[in-house]
Image 1 (spheres, rainbow, N blue to C red):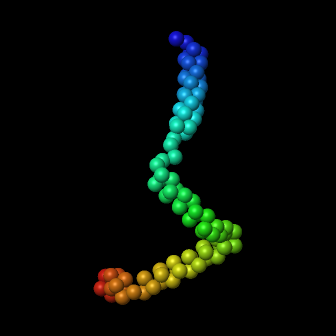
Image 2: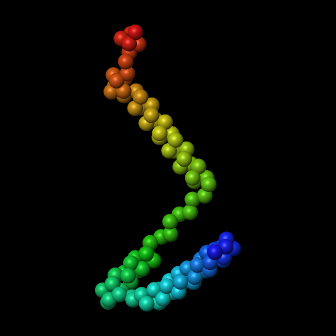
Image 3: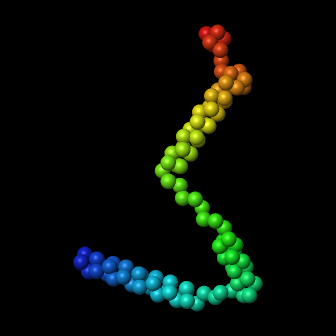
Length: 99
């Protein structure tokens, strides 16, 4: 078999795979059942609950920047507190004893 024939067969196999995937996808979704009465009742309750919730806020770049600055300040404060804690000081060797 020549290289050109092998390439054509590979492309043909790819097209067949795509057509098969589309066929199976449509056939599977059209056969899906809605479930029994209890499942439909639960789904309706979920949909009703979701409609009652407010939309989450959309944050623009200013809000994101403010949050980032707040996080950085908190991390900086926690970092200075951790380094000044007694356990952190006692774990470091003093210059007088390490010489």
